[in-house]
Amino acid sequence: MSFQNASDYQYYPTGAHLAARMWGKFKRPIGHVCDPSAGKGHLIRHAREGFPGVPDEGLPWLEGVEDRKIGRWGENLKDVMRKRFEHPPEVSCIEIDLQHHDSLRDLGVKILGYDFMEVQSLATVTQLLMNPPFQHGAAHVLRAWELVYDAEIVAVINAETIRNPFSKERQRLVQLIEQHGSVEFLEDQFTDDVDRQADVEVALIYL
Image (spheres, rainbow, N blue to C red):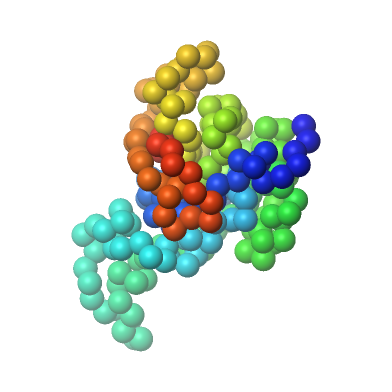
């Protein structure tokens, strides 16, 4: 399949606030993190920068953390914990738009391929973090489920995909969420602190 421009790719980078909510869904120790619809790497970059602009209450893992100094340099514990996901043991990505690959290389992440739907296995991945094209959200999440072996999947897709499961594909995804995860519906996630705006309700899925 050939695409000509960013609108064809449905490129809507994740803002820091939504990225924080996505990272905060993970329950297991972080191992090999993969972003299969990486764009310019915003999901990884936000984590490395400590989710700039997001207040402490917007970071779920800071709940209950004391505001105190630690270590010989007197660092603030909350500031340290804010960058909890700064350096995962392994980070990889997949991105179909070649124009974004330089940005991904600048982040130092391993590029596994171009088209996520053509990847054959992600068996070594322990956390999959994804903001796939909204028109194909169900297909991408289902494909992710097939590719991983024992992993957590966090995905943001169009809420209508879950609210209106008219197709067998959407119905399968709804059943998968009911059996193996959860979904949270959010509004105004692509209107602030984002490079491209979209007024759409999203479904934040955890599997």
